[in-house]
Image 1: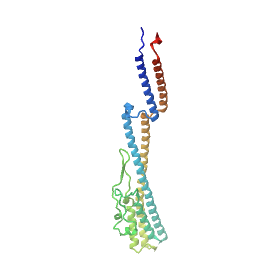
Image 2: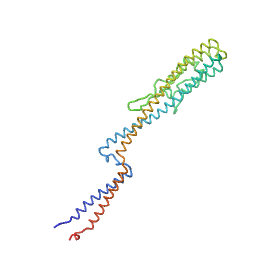
Image 3: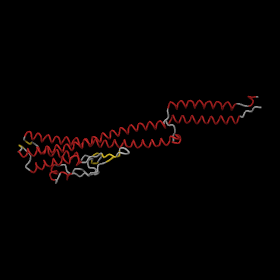
Image 4: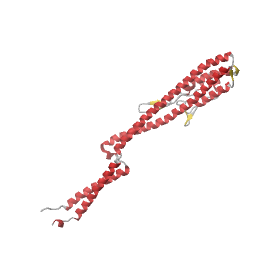
Length: 306
């Protein structure tokens, strides 16, 4: 005689219903959060890979921030270097014109303005720190801003207060870049040239009016020395520009790596919305079928089979 085990069958159907209900809940959770799981346990074997990838992404993003900060400082260096070079070239042009005319007009003013402008540029600050002082960011790298300070100094080098410790930043795991410039590297030769001219001007009666033969010889010689000093400052600017380009290249590499890692991490932990919607619909259909079947079994009795 055949028997119908109502209790056993109901329990089996009930377990199926609960599993389908859990699947629906999981599918809804994935759609709501956009994530496959709300913890690493739900990602099973990929959890370690995911954690390592996120840690790597964090380092890359930190390097990107450092590079952006350093690029701003390198760019500030270039702005001040442009000013220094333009002022030095203007002073050189003034000497050329004086020699061409054989007469010096307002030469002392040009001499004084040139030194003061360059000194002020070298004492520039960014964020309250002196950018050309090396590690001595709280001390003006040039001690003096008036031509009288330069004349009174034993040598042009005596005016520089920067140390020789360039500021550095780690821009990759393996690259520690020094990005700051030092005041004496930029204008040591310029100040020496300007001091020689200033000492001659203030110590020999001044370069005013018609030039003497000695004045012409002196200025001609100093013009060549000034050209060499300008070339030194120009080479510093060139190196600064190369640093900016290198930072830009490294920054682009970090950006590419960041995009790759974000995509890689997304593939592991993010939900495919289209697939999740399809799965939710299927899970809901299965849940409805389980509910209907359980309801039918609940209404069924042995009388239905007698």
